[in-house]
Image 1 (cartoon, helix red, strand yellow):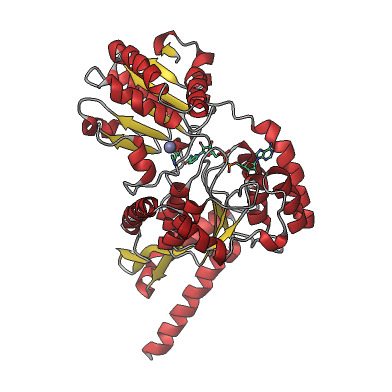
Image 2: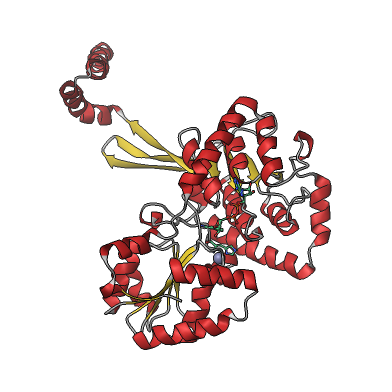
Length: 442
Ligand SMILES: NC(=O)c1ccc[n+]([C@@H]2O[C@H](COP(=O)([O-])OP(=O)(O)OC[C@H]3O[C@@H](n4cnc5c(N)ncnc54)[C@H](O)[C@@H]3O)[C@@H](O)[C@H]2O)c1
Ligand SMILES: N[C@H](CO)Cc1c[nH]c[nH+]1
Ligand SMILES: [Zn+2]
């Protein structure tokens, strides 16, 4: 467990800390570029080559799509308690995202005769990427499928990596069905992203792909930016636990390990100006680590000694300033009065308040979305929500009074910018209206 003192970090050390995992996307870009070129040229055959190589040796065009029999098997394969948990989480996620829905039409009079607003509509098709490499993610299935369905997207497909035998994780299938999504393809990584972005004989070309993925999927998204909308940058998991001298170090230690266990590239930090709490939490974390299985303990130990750890600051304000610079994917406020700090937190994908709101409750079932921007992108991207699957058209309406009110300004700006047809559309229309008025007044 690294213990860092913010005041003692060099500029390079600080920027390395904020850069998180050196996501070696460069290495992945070459394999992604090759795969995308093949899939662009050969469609399904290109997809199958990479699907067989990296996931499912028996992949064929005929078995890429999950069948009704596989859904039926999944329903029976999972324990009633797990099914009930997925249903409970799904209900809360649906409730939260339904509350996010905006009015379809908003039009207001901003000046006499001048009406302005917007028209909200769902995107036509969405491709949801549900990862499977280092974990099973029925929760991610819910976090992507529920808002897409609530938004009213007509065509929703899912790509998720299968096992070597071509099977798809059953709880994720049950979650998809509960969310209202049934078109699921057994594809992961680059081949999944490329198939959805480009379209093949089997996989439809999709208007927007969204969902967290590893460095390979991320490389494909980067190369296919512009071919389709590749959604928010959701990469390796990361978190900041913000503590003060009142924080129970055991809770801080427990919650520090949560996101650390996702992978060796996860970044989990405890940020506090209380050296006593920080050092005690480090001790507690070492004890709690012993309760994890070896592979998850390894993930935590690697991440907490390279990208994460305990960061000691000199004041609560300095801790808050660091949070805003770092812009974590997840953050917990475990200080004496979390609500009082809410206004000060400007950049985070998710803000959880107090000792009864540990990150896993939001990962799974508070109902807020857990697919969040990583890598500092919480400075400019939002958590997934119903808005991820909606778009807004500007809406304008002028009465004759409104036209008369705006015609001079419109023409002046068109003339200045050198757009004569823009100006002519106003000038000639105005002459036509004046002529019509005179004719009608006789
Ligand atoms: N930001 C979020 O909201 C969020 C949510 C959940 C998970 N995550 C993160 O998403 C990531 C998911 O990554 P993952 O690996 O578990 O699953 P993944 O599905 O992204 O990656 C597995 C795929 O990688 C491909 N692959 C593996 N090795 C390859 C190679 N050598 N060359 C080319 N392709 C290869 C395979 O096709 C496989 O299907 C994790 O880092 C996790 O922490 C983030
Ligand atoms: N913490 C992950 C996002 O970084 C979400 C998740 C799903 N399951 C467990 N955790
Ligand atoms: Zn998590």
